[in-house]
Image (cartoon, rainbow, N blue to C red; front, top):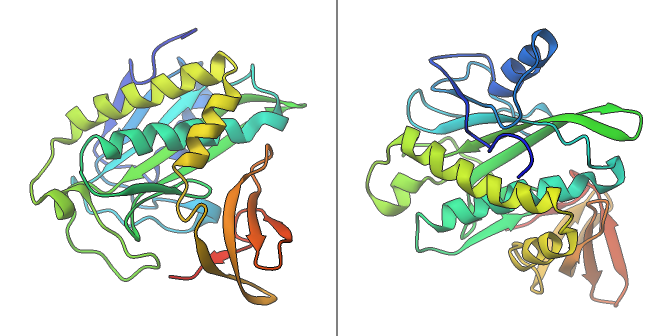
Length: 250
């Protein structure tokens, strides 16, 4: 890839508010090498999508943010970065377990119906270009007990009944992310989209969904270029949703 390999520089922290917030502050104060990873053993204010919380016991899970300089990517193609990162995490999880893994649109990773990883990408813009992206990833690794969530949470240790070495996992995760980010740089958007759609949770399966207008049944068929979820209703009419506009019913 052009520039530094993802994860070639790692800043390891005992504790911080959130790795995404730490990365954002770092970018304001210094010039940061592309691919820099900020790993924290505990986050006092871990964040998920739309500022929702992320539960993680100290020294149990992989909580890391990567700094990427995606200035080559027009804002109209921003979702391909989300797809590539999701695929990197998806491939990493698949390499560790034998159970069914899927990407729940837009960027949660599920094992069966349980969530094992989440992604939060925060882009900084200049005009119609992304100047840099902070890619936050949380993966449940050695934590066994979780509060009640929808979908419920699981972890690598809970599935495989063994503990994992976090630092080694970070290197393996970085390798998977670098593979897909290189494809973004090379402009292989169609290949990325195809792989993402093939990995999507409930794709081509009839399921029930919830919107503010009520429940309906439909089949996920894919995503649009700008990242909207496409669901084909039973009457044959496609409907499109942005993040948080539709809820999966389990």
